[in-house]
Image 1 (cartoon, rainbow, N blue to C red):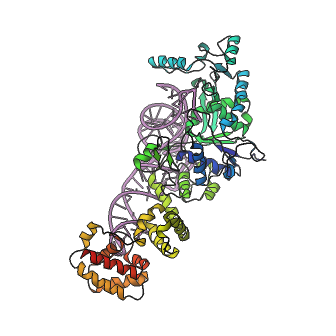
Image 2: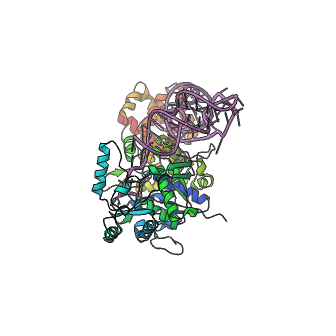
Image 3: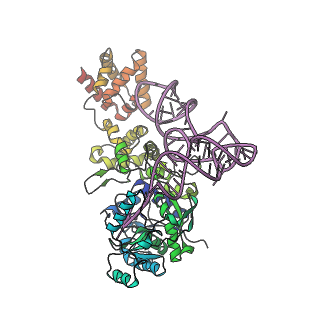
Length: 517
RNA sequence: GGCGCUAUCGAAUAAGGGUUUAGUUCGCGGCCCUCUCAAGGCUGAAAUCCGGGUUCGAAUCCCGGUAGCGCUACCA
């Protein structure tokens, strides 16, 4: 029987989750759901220095907003899982709560000769690096240098025992084998080979906070949690040989997960990866949700900017992947059906804010009128409470083609809920001249005489009147719009009049004529 | 500097040796519609990084160069 697929998204709570991180989570989720497998959320908080309060909650809330719910992990089934149970056999899913697990694995590696204790202080290593730099070289802790450094490979056994017993002042480093070609396979990039001599003896156990580094914790947890595919960002590709070597050292090659490294999200312009600064500079969010850091600095979020989560997810899915067909609009459920790692693009994807807006507009168009009305009522509250669903529905239907975000409705539809308090001076200057002041009262009287007030009837009648009298169509219509809306842009005059109703139209026209006289 | 990854219109991408006059979407330009703004319809400009090789034939395979990106921490 085919093994159950299990993937994980393993972010560090060092700040708000970047949209690139959401994409990684999404691809993991899509892969798992398509295979009928499990999507696990694990928190990699082994860096106590960089821990940011609230970041974990932010990650969870972001994924929930996107409709991505883990099967296992700190947020399984919509609630936080703290301890292991039959349903969550691998809990806890926060590495800081798993600290007791890792030490014995590090020691196992030492016993088998795959790792060693290193006693060099941070100052000593820093000095070595500066010295190497002076000679335009880079100091590397590796096969070449470890024999002349302060570690359990060079110190006598009793001295090593004494130092280790002190419980501090040592790290554990992986002993990279000499001159070995590490052959790896990546689901997206294919076969990769690296000579082990270019690798360095990475720290597996940190003295600083008595915790494993990413490399150790990651391999141990992926093994223990029976992860079958590791889908992560490209920044991890350089450490893939180390991870292969670690699986080998533990003797876990047979159950080793397959790897897929995703390319990075790039800036819309210029060079480099997408950062918070680009969003501030170019005016788009790089985070799913609004975030306020400890200094009170605010980062905008897709949610608060008016994006529908479905549109955000759809847009993200297409940044570095495509279905191979011309369909671009996919629900999360549809994405689950068609997603494939083989169609993930190898090169970096430049983020395009315009395309993101387009996706949102498409979802705005697909939304039912009833949903639009409900959303609008929820965001506007008392201001529009006295208007009927039918009225609001007509208003939103008329405006939905003119906006990209539901958040734009408030301003765009304001005149339907309140008569204009002033008129755009430029429009007044442009239209309120020549014969218009004498024509408008006649138009007003004609409107007052209409018995039916449907869009078609009002439109045809008023246009007919203007044509019969050979009045300037544009000027008369725009002046009417000016009185109705307050400015000379907006939907068709007939549409506006039909929704506003005869009484309100006459009131606004009278007000306009009166105030400009 | 070292190691690795990547390279098609402005952007996202399609084309998996011949079906290619390199397609689609966003954006940009024009025209139509029109009372303005949108929307819509039609339409235009716009790309295989460079150089070698393999082959009857290369965007596609190989090599080199270049460029971009990533990594090079007791960060993840």
